Every structure is written in structure tokens, then in C-alpha cells.
Length: 463
Ligand code: 4AD
Ligand code: MG
Image (cartoon, rainbow, N blue to C red; front, side):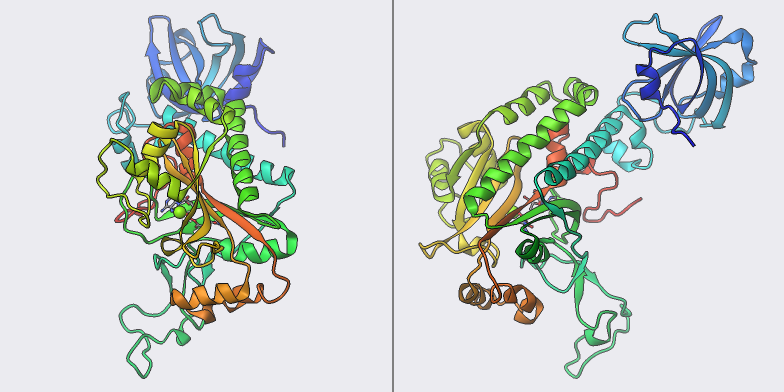
């Protein structure tokens, strides 16, 4: 069966005066004395197609049934539109109501609903201009990720969602268990006996596919993951989700500088792809949410990112006139107010910070000669803060083992990871891009709950 023409194709077609069938949801309807107009949208493009309804051809009940939110099928003639800004429209011969929508109770009647309200009706919000635009851009971004890595010789690796290890060592995991929550089997010490659990041990939803991606890189050289990750961190912010999507490239024979170069090239490619392929949606978001959106995207593509060490960044913050809520001193993790200052006030462009204190970073990062810092890198973006976190990995067996011991990580849960350092170890690096943070950046949305169809956050798993 041929693919049916959608509204995007019909609007762009100049093959006029032919019979077409169009399906979609009614956005608005205006009734005049002789003709009525319905604006139909099917989500293929931000624009609606206008349906011209000659009152003489239809009974009143049919015209009345075409309410905002209803779904209709129209058979008619595609004609060139005289209205400004519209290329084609459909003169209706037949209208079939596929699904009515009660005018009094359909929640999207009024224009200008708040984003907060729309979050409560996440089952219907994709039918708004804003969310149609955001979710189309999200799709194009996902597609561009695969395109970039495929063009650059990376293999997409499917890392497990259920794991027995805590890659980030932050203990922010969701447990996966089939044991009875009220009456679990206990061992001699009175603790829950996970040997009787489904997998015969404690398991959780993954916080990162990195450790497994490293195994892949040490065989296929260049791999990447792109999948959901889960963090039970109780941070109710506009930048955190409990379930988010992460892209994690991992490359053998890359050191930290190669890693930074790749991160910068990748982000620029992604932003350029969105600029090239999502013009209508970007123009809408630029007009409605942030007049500097497109300009900001173009500037990211055209500027070299600043690259500074953590120590230099701390010096910049210490010299700042601005008062910060969180005190700055060497050794503390950078807070979002600090990241914002660096990117938006000081460097005025994306910033890559490297060589963080080892005590605030994960066990797997390569230790520097100074004994204090590790080859960690964070990419900070305007309006977002940290968009990427990554590092060169510790490839030296003894040093890695020592770090695992120092940080009280259960060696049994990562024995396989350690073995790669015993058998043919190699310099390697990688990073993780938070997909939703990227989508935030390119859509000018300000809350991460508005760039994923069904957000998972503390106290919220509706839909
Ligand atoms: O900095 P993170 O924790 O790094 C890792 O997970 C590494 N294993 C990545 C690697 O080197 N392969 O997370 C990476 C990115 C962050 O920079 C941020 O963009 C995003 O993931 N992120 C979140 N996004 C939404 N909600 C959360 N709770 C997030 N936590 C991290
Ligand atoms: Mg991080």
C-alpha cells in the first residue's frame, strides 16, 4: 500500500486541481454565511491546511460536528490558496467525522494555555503547536545522532537496561526485583536474600551504559549507546529527570583532547542539523519563546568552545564580582549558578572544563600526575549548564583497582570491567550527552519536563 499523503506534502504540493483525501485534527473553525473554514493539522508540519466548506453542500449538523479537537477525513480538491501565507487548501466534497470532540469538555479549546497546565494533559499536549514542534525537533535530533556516528564509523551498541553495577557510584538507582515487598526471603543476618531474587543478585535500572560501552570500544574501537537511563536522585529541578535518554560514545585510542574535539564537533553537527532540517518549528519557537534562539544556535556552530581547567575556572569564579549562593573554593563541585556565570557572563560561549578534583568524580576517570585531579571534562552550554559529562578512562590496572578500593566499590560487581585492563588495555575515552538537555537547548524550552513526551520525576509517573 502506498504511503498516504500527509498535510505537509499537500501544503508543499503544487499539483493542483486534483482529488485528495486529508485526515487530521481540527484546530479551529470559522463559520461564515456561505462558507465555513476549518484549519486541519496532522502533526506532520506546524502549519494547518485550510478546508473550505461550502455551506450549500453540507447539512448543518455535519458542519456543527466539526468542532475544535475533532478528527475528520475530508475528500476534496486541492487548490492553490489565495490567502496569504498558505500555499494550498482543500475544497471539501465530502466530510467524514472520524472522532468527535465535545466542545465543552475538550481541554485545548482556548489559546495560550500555560506549559504547566499542558503538563497535566500530556496525553493531549502533542496536539498543540508548541509540543508538535518540540517533538518533531526531538525526532530529528535522534535521527541526526545516528547519522553522525554512522558517518564517522561508530557502532551503535545496545547496552543493558538492567544491571548489577552502579556505573557512576552515586547510589541513585532504582531497584529491579520480583521479590515480595511485604514478605521477602531473608538470610541468616535478617537481610533480604537477593539470591532468591529473579537474577540471583541485586539488580537495578542502569544509570549509564558507559561501563559496557567501554567493553565494546576495547573491541570495536568506536561505539556509542543511545538509550534510556534512570536516576533515583531526588532533584526536582528544571534540568533533571528520573528517566532520561543518554548518548554515550566511547572510543579506543582517544585521549582527553581527542574526546573534547569529538564532543565539540558532534554538538556543532547536531545543532547545524536542526538548523537545516527544522526551520519552520525553530521559527515558531523563536517567535513564541525566545527571540534569540536561532541566533544562539548559529553562534554555537560558528564559535570555538572555550577550554579551561577546573582550577582556572575556580580562579575565574573567585575573581567574579557576582555573589554566589554556593561558596566557591578549590575542591567543590561547580553548581549551576557557577556554570552559568562561566558560560553566560565570563566566556560568553560554550565552555569545556577539564581536570576536575578526583574526589568529586567517578572511580573510572584517568588520574593525572598531580595526584589531585582526573581527566574529566564537562561541556557547559548557555542556558543549560552541563550538557555533556565525560572523561579519559583509567586504563592502568593497578591504579584503577586502587581507586575502586578507595571508593569502597564492590569489586565483584565490576570484575569484568577490571579484566579489560588486564587483557590488552588501551587508552580510551568517552562522554555522555543528556539528550533532553540538548533538546532543551535547541527548542528554547525552559523546563526539561517539556521536551520528553511523558516525564518521570519525583512523585510523578502519570501516563
Ligand atoms: O555527567 P553524567 O552523570 O555522566 C555519565 O553518566 C557518564 N557515564 C557519561 C560518560 O562518560 N559516558 O551524565 C551525562 C549527562 C550529563 O552531562 C547531563 O547532560 C545528563 O547526562 N544527565 C541528565 N539529564 C537529565 N536528567 C538527569 N537526572 C541527568 N543526569 C545526567
Ligand atoms: Mg556530570
